[in-house]
Length: 295
Image 1 (cartoon, rainbow, N blue to C red):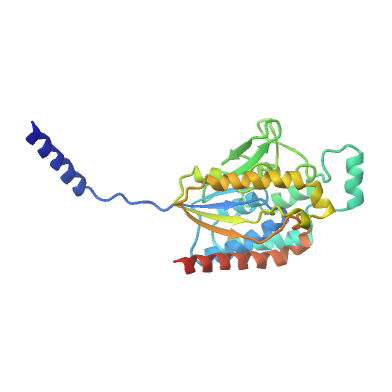
Image 2 (image 1 turned 90 degrees about the vertical axis):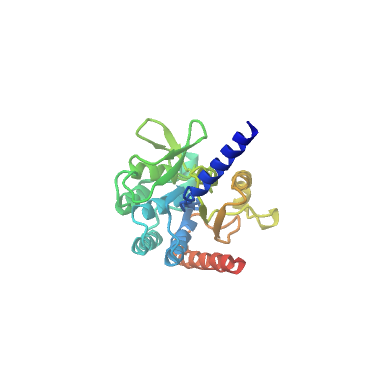
């Protein structure tokens, strides 16, 4: 009996040796964070990444990052990145959100749910986004929105793309809640998931490329009067992001392209778009250089 078991063990070993080695399929997931107008920097990042042969097999995005992600997913090429840069330059010249202080205060006093109607942003998205349904993409794309009734993130890979992007970019208090086709009401996907790493990891990537333009939480000494009003929100967001990073496996290949920002970084100063495009390129070049130096 012992001899039989030994022969069978050798047979199984030889059988395994004869089998062709399993080929690990590379699967690169691009992660687009939220960041309001800082989303312009992601266009600059994309130019450098694609020029260096780094392209996505799948995309995850929230808020402004969802807009960039959808645009790239339709046609992940340098030419498309150029069109995305032109879109952001259009944003710089024709701000999609009004920033008049008097009007904003008046909106609060009148009991309105948002400073801005969202009409200009919707028109901008409808004019530039090159498809009607999110499923009409070359690369799978996951757009995150926050369900206003539950506070939970909902992920979409199909549906009316203009409505989904308006919902994912609906900053609470600034832009109105968006009612989607299923009757649910949604707001900015970055509220509870501003760098959607957990969703990205669930897609079984072999590499993550994180385009991080999220505003960072700053020490109290750097706070302005306005940012102090948001300190609780930013602190909570920073903790949620920290927890999401903890969910990323330590042995996973991660390229973190990070735009250096502080807590009082601009949210709606659209005139800064040209500078942000350049800053995004520089951030990507720095990340790639550091990666190369590490070997």
